[in-house]
Image 1 (spheres, helix red, strand yellow):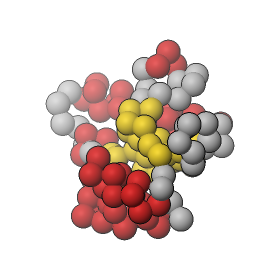
Image 2 (cartoon, one colour; image 1 turned 180 degrees about the horizontal axis):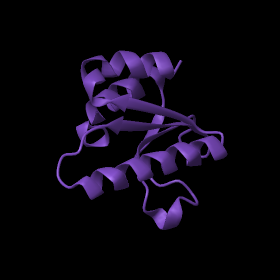
Image 3 (cartoon, one colour; image 1 turned 120 degrees about the horizontal axis):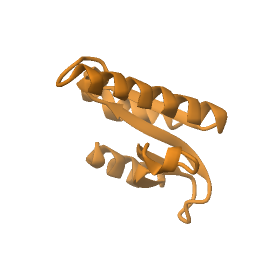
Image 4 (cartoon, helix red, strand yellow; image 1 turned 90 degrees about the horizontal axis):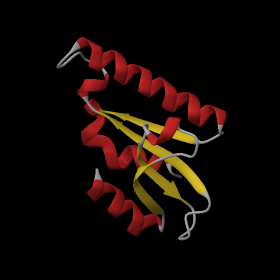
Length: 107
């Protein structure tokens, strides 16, 4: 994912921050995978990106962890909706199409 974001940075002159923590996201406990900004100073947020691995969809380790992950995902969705922020979620099964998906959604 980092490599693809770097490619997009070169191609589209976008600015990103890894593990972005949105203001007011419950004491900083929820971090978004990437934030895409329209300016170098990172004042104007364009969108947030979440890459959802298998553990977002399947119970892997402990059932409780899966349920907590689902709650965190919902809180991130709600945060973006409440703050009118575009959220791009990319499921793990789309990994091969990652660059194409991001190019399309960042137009």
